[in-house]
Length: 345
Image (cartoon, rainbow, N blue to C red; front, side):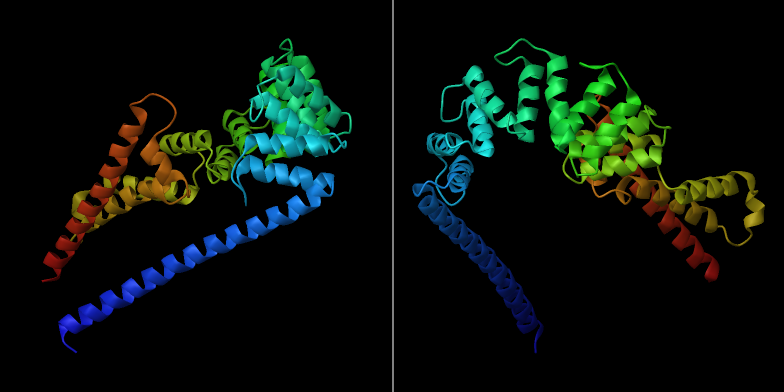
């Protein structure tokens, strides 16, 4: 087989694989859409028979456009049917539509009325919604103490958003006396449920040593959990921690220290014929520092591109430093190889 035939065969194979992948993706998307449309049809049939759960489910589908065209007014209509039957989930959803002005004119008093109906049934999200209303002063006087009271009810039912809010309130003394230990306790409850804001909060408390002994490695662990979910503050914090050299495993730090001392302390004549070794050690040091920035966190390359949410010069400086480390490691490695080859002759 000639080289041109080989190239044609490879190109054809790659095109076939890419085409099959695209077609399979399209097929999966269409299959998912058909399933959603079927779910919407079933929900509509049940809703027409007056099933409150189905009516609320159909309202959710219209609100987000799953299986049906997005239509806020239609979502409100179905939410109202279920809410009038006393379904707490629908009452909360209807209140949220009034709060955000989706499908109906924005009306905070009406939102509060529906939230209270759901909260009176012990629906945690409605209790948290009332806390949000009082925290922002939407339709009522701003009252952080009342916000904390409602959020505490939701937090005690296990709502992670309310638990995170309580953590924030205790950390900043907002509506409650400032208490870092209590802030960590509530942050951790939400963080253990995978709530990214709370994971960032736990990481911040460890980073600053508030309510817990300062522990940068533990801070990095929680920052990374939040960053893996796309939390930009956590990604920024990770970049700052790595840039400052805190919270990093000790093996690379020890390696850099040992190699650096060897280069500074050992006289040049002691290297003998192995004049290439210092270059190799310099390359290893640069690579070790670079590993901290690129390999220890899934989110760290993105952090390096975006830079932290701080002074505008910090991100570009860090990016330049990263490039210099990579280039320096490569140059030193090439110099070591050249030296070893020269001495072997």
